Length: 264
Image 1 (tube, rainbow, N blue to C red):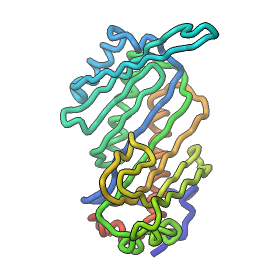
Image 2 (image 1 turned 90 degrees about the vertical axis):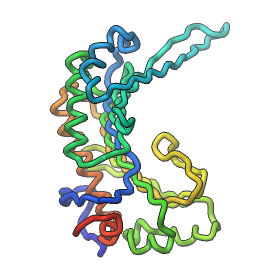
Image 3 (image 1 turned 180 degrees about the horizontal axis):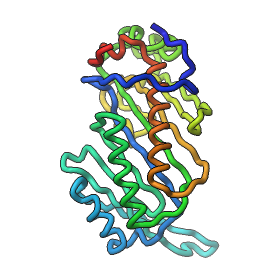
Image 4 (image 1 turned 30 degrees about the vertical axis):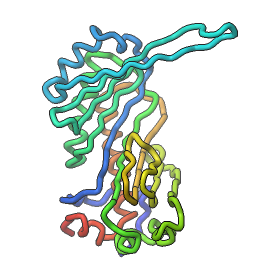
């Protein structure tokens, strides 16, 4: 049954747990004014110790930037992305000199995710000391691979299902809808549609696979400047996650929830 509420302003519905959730990835990110000392191992060491019991594996990634002038390379700079992973590598914390991200492919509940996010921000605030925030965002990305275009018709709201049936049989490469909405929490970037094999809209979130898939990608963010206060950031991130869930529930029919193991 189609939902009549406005997903851009309505309060979130109660969460329905899905035993076979199609959620591919969830991430929350805070971008802050650069702290260049984060590139130094000795500076980041105390932060690693604070979270090491939950994220014991470290995989640093180094990148180099060349700045060109009229006579060639004028200068170079090196940046490090510190990747901290849990034991099964399904939860990842990425720290650079200008942002921190919590990412998972093993999402359970909103409260669990936000508790983990709070612990990361509190450790960062105490040990790294960022002062101002440039951007805060929360992103939920779903992918369905086991259903045909015809089967999707009974799972999705008609406005979301759109022209998906035309893609069945290979008559088109892909069909993606992208919309940017203003919401109380900032902005909601919504993308959904049908993807052919070996094609993706974002390889970091949706790795390429060898079969057709349908995606729903919801990214709520704000670029309004704010102070780096962990409790406030988590509360805003929680509201963003709730907005994303409200949009998700608007996009799908009740049959979608039942199909993926929800009890409603």
